[in-house]
Length: 68
Image 1 (cartoon, rainbow, N blue to C red):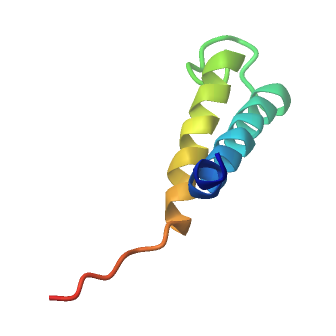
Image 2 (image 1 turned 45 degrees about the vertical axis):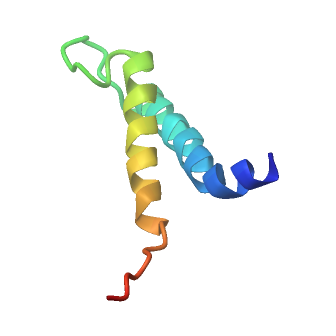
C-alpha cells in the first residue's frame, strides 16, 4: 500500500483538484442556457476537470534518462 500511495499520490491529488476545479467552473461560470456542452452539466464539468488534472499531473513526472 505504501508503494502504491507513493507512486500515484500526485495523480490522485491532481484528479481530485481538477474535479473540484471543474465543478467550481460549472457553479460559478457555467452556462445557464444549456447550450454549452461542457459547462451546462455538472457531471461533465467534473469529469472534464479531472481529466485535465490527470494530464496536468503528467508534467511533474520524472523522466528516466536512457544511457546507450
